[in-house]
Image 1 (tube, rainbow, N blue to C red):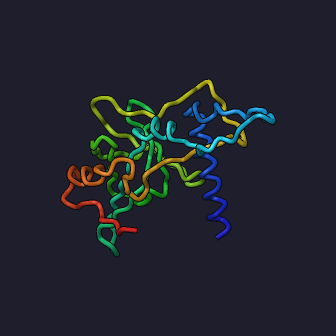
Image 2: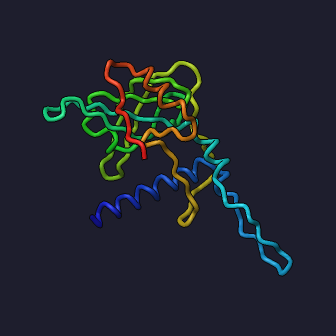
Image 3: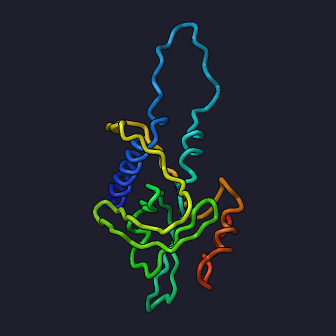
Length: 188
């Protein structure tokens, strides 16, 4: 159990560092000196602008595994489009034992993906889709070096709730490339 917690913390730090490196707007906050005349700001801190900029590049990753016990097991996770060539970063545990990997974009397009490579130690995997037309790529600032202690934000859609675009889940189901459909998820 402690190993899983440590692994989760390390993955969170890695994803957070990656987001800080890719999204300079997350790093541009500074602590302002306080004076006697300052008034408290009642508005909550918000990552809304960063999420809006990054969300189009977040994809759903479906893994279909055919095995002797469940015959047709479907798992779901998230990934992020890293460049216009169709390379996607996701977690290795999302695509473990996959016989077929499907990627659904926020704009409704659905692609079969190829596994380029994966690493068990970091729990990372790289996928590739062949897409025509522009892809929504995660914003990257190559001039920014992440530092220990930087504030990070991880976004995704691992349970396919599509809270940011309520119609996305049904649109993805309608374009599923095989006869089988993604599973229905129970309501909260």
